[in-house]
Length: 390
Image (cartoon, rainbow, N blue to C red):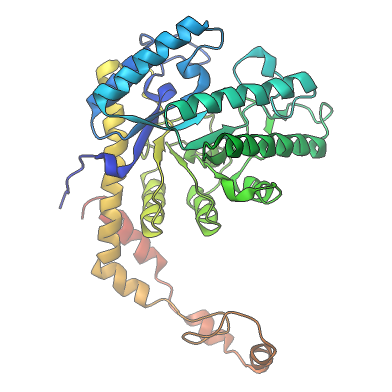
């Protein structure tokens, strides 16, 4: 029953320099693994096998205080690693959260000079991403928010955010970069209250932009789980609006801090329904594993972490195919009531006066409707059994 779980570049799996390159540091302890250069991280991903690409923040690749000579040397080594492994750069982003200058935010800082610097830094990072062929640009507002509402007018802050995104979309167009921008939500951490905290917030915000056709979302499993939300429902909203431009796969215990566990390691059933959703609806974008190995891992275990991330996705993809073709599942689904908005097979869903009048006059048997069987326990149990290989 087990199918081949060997990944290939056609699967479009990617990792960030900051993911497999994470040295095991956390807020309570220093590094447990040696820091790797960008080129060494690319080599590790090449060793894992089947990876399409590597992604970076600007300062993952080039330290913020690097000289021109140092930057040139790093880029040379990085490019050579890409060539020898066959990996490519798929996505780029900007670190607008780490440096003390962004202590009050970047695009939404109260300091106009900081806001200008944030746009300046992002333009330079877009140049860097384009230099290496990235075609998706992710924007995460990790410091865009506040700890106290006394600090900022949230309406003015959203306008500042909008102005910055509009500016950068215009810059991409003028430079001919062709970026698809993917905005990434998160409810909290590192700030107590982050603006645009969920996928729904961002989808609404995007509609206010001057050219929202170029802007979508980059939802992350852990970020929605931190807020206790159903990630598949958030992704479904993005798919429905054709705004799923990128996705971050990891795992997370509900309500905890940002744990960035290996995909599927905490909530395999939730991961299954996510993979099923992506595959059933033909998502063809990059699948980025924005996670990192346990702090206990050595280099060899980090390689297994990368392989395991991809293998889990492929195993769940195989399970989704088996679920869709399973005779028990088909039988249970066939028992569910069918029909359109106004009842009956193929009934019209759009309003017309004639349809409204007919629906208004229709009588309903509430007791009969309430008695209809909905075998969801059986359906969920069969799902569990499929995931357990039964």
